[in-house]
Every structure is written in C-alpha cells, then in structure tokens.
Amino acid sequence: MYSQIKRIFFSMKNSFIFRLWPFVRPYQKYVFSGFVLMCLSTLVSLIAPYLTIGLMNNVLVPLQNQHSVEPTLIYYYLMAFLVTAILTWLLSWAKTYVLAIGSEYITKHLRTFTFNHILSLSLDFYNYRRTGDLINRIGQDTDRLNVFMATSLLNFIQDVVMFFMILGFIFSLHIQLGICTLLPVPIIFSLVLGLKNKLSFCFEQCNRVWSQVTNHLTEVISGIRLVKCFAQEQKEILNFENINQRNLKMNNYMNKIWSFFSPTNTFITDLGVLLIWAIGIKMLWQHSINLGVLTGYIAYSTKLYSRIESISYFFEEYQKSCIFMKRIYELLDRKSKLLETIHPIQLEHIEGRVDIKDLDFFYDDKQVLHRINLSIKAGEKIGLVGLSGAGKTSLMNLICRFYDPTAGGIFLDNINIKDFALHDYRNFLGIVLQESFLFYGTIAQNIAYANPHATEQEIIQAAKLANAHEFILQQPLGYDTLIQERGNSLSGGEKQRIAIARTVLSNPKILLLDEPTSALDVITEDAIQNALNQLMKDRTTIVISHRLSSLQSFDRLVVIEKGKIVEVGCHDELMLNQSYYYNFYQLHKNLHQEQLS
Image 1 (cartoon, helix red, strand yellow):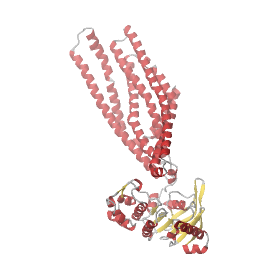
Image 2 (cartoon, helix red, strand yellow):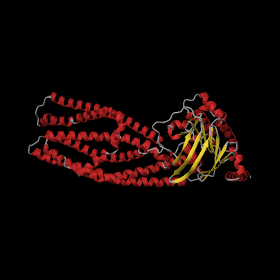
Image 3 (spheres, helix red, strand yellow):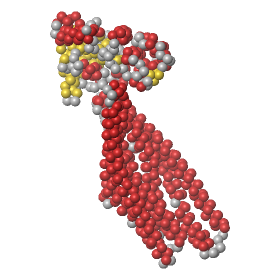
Image 4 (cartoon, helix red, strand yellow):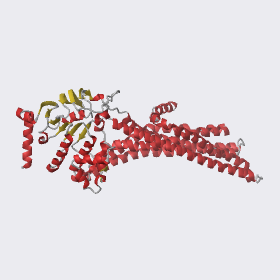
C-alpha cells in the first residue's frame, strides 16, 4: 500500500496541479491568504468538541447527579460555543471568498492563455480539429477546472489540514482510542487505490463521448441549411441518439463503480465508530475514562471519519480534472510550424515586389508544388490559372504564409518573408476569399475589422470604393445594422462587397484574391468586379479565378498544372502558343456556351 501511495504522490507531483503553477503565481497572494484563513477556520471549528468535554463533565453530569452548578459556568460554555460558531462562520466565509476570487483569476488567465496560444498556431492545426472540441476545451474544460480548484481542491486541502489537527486532539485525549480510530483508514485508502485506474478510464471515456455529443451538435447547427435542404432531420436525430446512448452507457458504467464505493466507504467508517463506542463503553465501565472525554472523543472521531470520506471522494474529482487538464495541455503543448524569427526586419513601407524561388511544398507527405520560380513586379497583376487541385490555392497559402515551403523561399522586396514578424508581414497583405466570412456585429464593425481605429468617414469611403455604400444605406439602420451570425441576413454579393470594403480599409500593398466572384450571378459579378478593379489599382495583385474573362486584361497569367508552372504570359501570347492555356480557355468557353444554351 505504501508503494501505491508513493506512486500516486509522484504522479500528482508531475500532474496538472504542478503544471498550473505558472498560472497561479501571479495570484499567489489569494492562495496564501486563503490557506491561512483555512487553517484558522479549521482550528476554531475544532474547539467546539473540546468544549463539549468540559460541558459534559462540569455541567451535564453534575446536573444529572443533582449536584449544584454555578449558573455563570453554564453561561461561559454557551457563550464560548457562540463565539466559536461566529468565528468559524466569519473565517470560513473569508476563506471561501478569497479562494473563489483567486480561482476565478487563475481560470481567466488559463482560458485567455489557451485562446491566445491556439490563435498563434498555424492553419494545419485547425485542419484536423473539430470546432466543437476546441470550444469545449477552452470554455467548458477550463470552467470545470475552476470548479475543481474553488471547491474540490480547496475542500481536499482543508480536509487534510483538519485530519491532522483532529489526530492531534484525539491522541491528546487517549492514545489507545486514537489507535483504534485509525484502523479503518488503511481499508478505505486501499479501496480508493483499487478503484483509481477504473475511475480514470471511465472519466476519460465519458469525456471523449461527451466531446462527440458537442461536436455533433456544433456541426448540425452550423450546417442546418444543408440538413433541411436534403430533409435529413431524422437521420441527424438518429445519429445524435446513438452518440447520446454511448454517453449514457459510459456514465452508467461509472455510476455502477461509484455506487459500490460510496456506501462501502460509509459502512467502513460506521464500523469504526461502532468499534470506538464498544471500546469506550468498556473503558467507561472500568473507570479509565470519564463520560466527557468519551463524548468529545466520539465527536472528534465522527469529524475525522467524515474528513476521510471527503478525502476519498476527492480522488474522483481529481481524476476528472486530470482529464480536463490533459485536454487543455494537449493544446498548450502544440507548437506552431511557423517559426517566428528572433530579430524580425521592420519596414513601414514596401514596394510590393514578390519573388518565388525554387519552391517545393509537401502536404501530408504528398508533394503539392514542384520547383516554382516566379517573379512578380510591384504593381503587377497576375492571374493563377489551372484545373482544380493543380496547386493554385496552395501557392496562395504559402504567399500568405499560412504554411512554410518545404524547400525554397518567398521574398518580398528581396527579403525572405520568414525574416518579417508574422503580424507585420500580413499587414502588407489584403485577402478576399471566395466565401466571405462576417462576424456577428454591425456592418461598420465588420468593415473596420482589419483597421479597428478607422474613422466613420474612412469606413464610408471604403464602402463606396467597394460599391457597397448604396445597399448599406438601404438597410434598416444603415452602417449600424446588425449582421446575424456568419452574415446569414445578407446575400452573397452583399457579403462579398463588405469583405472587399474591409480589405480596402486595410490599405494593403499586396492583394490576394481567391475565386472572389465564382459563386455570384452575372449582375452581381459585374458589381463585384468593378469594386475589385478599384481595389487592384496601384497594388501588386495575385488572383485565382476560373472565369478567364476577368483575367484577360491582367499583365501576366501563370498556368499551373500538377503543381508545376507550365506557362507564363499575357492572354494574347498564351492564346497564340495554343498550348495549356489555349486548351484550358477553349474548355472553359465550351462549358460556358453549354450553360447558356
């Protein structure tokens, strides 16, 4: 048993409780103050059973034997009980309040740090993570840790302190009874150690299944339009019922184990109290102790056993919290694949020249780009052309530095983009994607997202350049109109123009457009294209588009096939070559004619 306790101690030493110290350190004054108040409140709460001994021997027994007792002595004991109760209440309130505030600060620090950390991770991290799982870890798991620290851990420390204080009182009253009191303790802790691994497995499985429940909820609610479009409500209800059934099964298995432990624990402590009564009555019969000592001893023993029960229950909460903290530290231990340079180059202004040299890129052990070499002059407009899966978006992602190339490099004004601070480099870029994401908030707030300090006039001017000003004024509250989640209250073209206005306001030197008009109708596309033409003026522009008509006026078109650049030139030159671009253009033209017919 000693080796098991030693193993648990060292496992706890390396557990999250010690890893939490960096988050606890700034608020250690709360922890220290709370610990002092806890010790004081515990000590004061143990005075009452000691007073019971004197009350029994000096007041109750004499009164029962019809002996006279001084009334002042009765008032003394009653007043002492009252003062003890008031002091215990005040100290317990102060302790609970101080430690609750401290745990809230610690949890806030942990939650903020975790959120900041996952935002610093590269996009590859998010490719394999489900939104519901991340939300659970940052929100629900940290909140559960807060409850653990504010209640379970606090109670555990108090129980341990009280346990040793009670032992001191017990052995000071009677050594033989003290030894008898400790007899159930090894049995209870052996039971706890025996169930430890089973409980740990149960909590981990329950948490995993619960994550599946929340992930399913998140995905179905996010994709509710698709669910209703294909009338798949019953299918999703059945899927949820199956996941929920697994959750029920795991919880029932855990409850089966815990329902055995809890009453067994109580039964063992009851036997301990019964043993003390039996030995105490024998000693009382032999006149080796008096009634007051036995009564006080029983009171202390009852408190001791209740502390032992509470300590044993702590291991349940501890195992749960280990799972929560493990999930959080799985995030915190992840490192971004985009390494920041120690001494970044700082430039306030750039020309906008982009050079891509000998670039290779592997994604999940699959080579996506092969020996890409391309020089783009400042202010030049470049179109990336190719079939789906050719590598156009991968190249765009590398220019944005969402990923780093496996070999070769990308240079901005002859400076490797890795030599810039990531934040500074991306401030030079403006990005408009095929599907524009809008946050819950006003139209003005969404436009100003890239430049939170923009004035109202600057927001309006950006909207005008994006051909968005007129439709915004038609909204109920104009620029103060609230956009619902993901912009569901706006049409695709309206969302796209707000996204363009957002990019205009950021005033980028390099503009990156990934299929900005592919999902729009012809009339809306014309309006968007006019807005994009305004945006592209005097900016280095790189555009991915399958609508070749929008690229014909560009300075150069770069044709990519199977991860390689196979042709570079303007529209007229490439058509004269009658090679890759020519075939691609003819295919696009024929498809367009078929759609019109």
